[in-house]
Length: 82
Image (cartoon, rainbow, N blue to C red; front, side, top):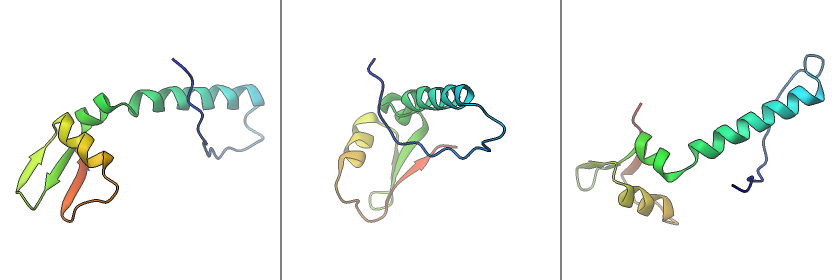
């Protein structure tokens, strides 16, 4: 898998960590984000609440439609199942 280039803002105390520890932490965070940012993972933890149709769904096709829209519909919410 090709590594993803992303901008991360990590706030650390410079005195506590050396460069090698910082690079290791950045690598771990990047690996964790690549797992979490997949559509399969999002479908497992998110759902769409459509107040217009009185419907709650966690189907992949519906989530993909909602995420791909340029503008969001009124009273349609993407919520975490937690």
